[in-house]
Amino acid sequence: MKLLFTSLFSIIAMFPFPPAPCVYHQERTASVSRGSSPCILAKKIRVKTNRNIELFGLMMQLDMGPDLATSKDSVTIENRKSTWREWYAMTYKNYLRYKKFDSCAMMQRYRELVGKKYYNDFFIGFLLQVDEVPFAKINAGTDKETLLAFSPTGDYGEATKNATAFLQEFNKFYALLHFGSYLEENNRFYELIQSDVRRNLPDSFFIPVMEGFYGKSFNAYYLIPSLNIPTSQGFGKMNKTSRTIYNTFGPFSFQTFDKRHPELGFDYPEKIARLSVHEFGHSFVNPAIDKLPDELKSSTEYLYQPIKEDMSKSAYTNWTMCLYEHFVKAGEVIVARKLGHPAEADKMLQDCVRARFIYVPFIVKELERYDAGTDPGKNYDDFIKTVLEDLKEANKS
Image (cartoon, rainbow, N blue to C red):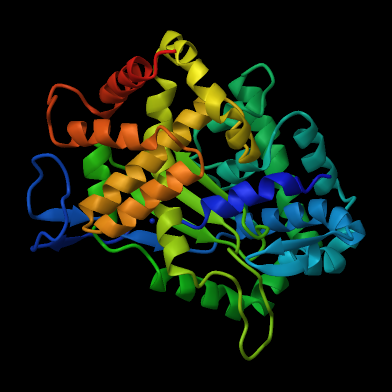
C-alpha cells in the first residue's frame, strides 16, 4: 500500500525521542565546546507555519486518502487499539473534503514526478527555499543544487524553467482550493500548535552546545510544525545558500478537533526536544559521513550484517544510512551530557542498544576523546574517519 505502514513505526520511534535576535548569556551553565568562552552567543530556534508546507501536506493527504478509505486494518499504537483513519485523522478529514481535486493538474504533475523518483523530502526541501503561495517563486536564496534536480540532464536553464512551471501550477492549486480560506478557518489550530511547540523547546544552550561540539554553525534554525503533514512524519532539510536548517513535522500522536479543547498532537516536551537534537544533528553529521572515503565505507560494510534485519525494519536499508543514524544518536548522547543531563544521556544510550544501534556506545567513547581535545589537529569531519577505522579494528571478523 502507498501508505508504507510498515515503515511507520520507525518514524514513530524517531520522534520519541530558527535568523532570530541573539542574546548573550553571562553565566555558563553548560559545557559548550573545546576551549570556548564562558560568554556565548545563543541562537534561538524559530517556530513558524509555512503556507507552502501546509499546501503540500494537503497533497500528501490526497495521495494517502484512497488507501485510508479502503483500509479495514486495526493497529495498536501507544497502547491504544485504533484504525489507520484514527491515527491519520486530519489526513482523512481533508481527503474527504478535497478529494474532488485529487485528479487536478497539480496532483497529476506531483504523481508524475514521484514516478520519476522525486520523493516528498525533495519537494519539502524545495518549497522551503522559495517564496510562499499564493506567490510562490524562486528567489535569491534558492539553492542552485536543489534547482538542478528539476533537469534530468543537470542543465540549469532547463531546471529553472521546470521549477518555475511547477511553482506556477502550485499557485494555481492554492487558488483552486481557496486554500487561503482553509488557513484562515484553522488559524486557531495553527496558533495552538505554535504555542505547544514554543513551550516545549530545548533549553537556550542547546544550539551553541551542539555547534560547539560539531565545530560548525548555521545562520538559522527553524522548526516548522504542520497541521497537514501526516501524523508521525518529519523531514529535516538544509538550505546551503542561506545556511539554514529546517525541521518540518506533523503531529506526534492522535488528534481530536473539539472546538473547546482540541488535542492536536504537538504538546510533547520530550519529543520536541529529542526531535530538535536528532533532526538538526543530521545536518551536521550527514555531510561528514558523505565525505568519508568510499574504500573505508565499503571495507566496514560487514559491520552492517549483524544488525541488518533490525535496521531494515526501521528503514535503514544500507550501511551509509546506518552510519548517519549511529553518529547522530551518538551526538545526541554527548550533547545531553554537555547540557548537564547525564541520566537522560544514559537512558538514550540504553535505548540505542535496545534498538540494535549496537555501535553507538563505542562511537560515543571515541567522540568524547575528540570533544576532550585529545587530538586538537582534527575537526569533527576528520575525526569520524578515525572513529570508523577504530570501530573496524575493534570488530575484526
